[in-house]
Length: 118
Image 1 (cartoon, rainbow, N blue to C red):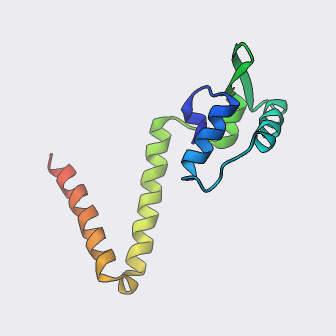
Image 2 (image 1 turned 45 degrees about the vertical axis):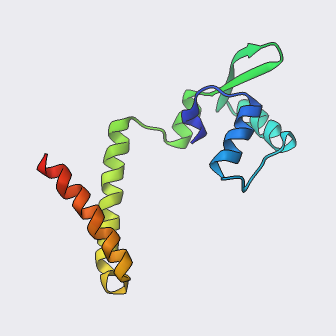
């Protein structure tokens, strides 16, 4: 998530988007800078530093609230709830899984088992 990348220039934002989409989207300045301006107008990001003509943008508290960025403890709790739900889903569909999928699940189980042994 770009919000976790720190303060970025518009050019860096474009580079990160391209990298995060594995080259599937190479945004142009004509699409990124109007979006940056709109986010700035909404108070979701702000200029945090200027070096010559370069502006570095950072997310505001309002922006963090909008994207639901939470503490690491909340992220872990949310991940555990999601994992529990996924396990239920997989178990409900166990008979539909391929042999390879079941083997992958066994490997995941072994990772957890090893963690509990330490």
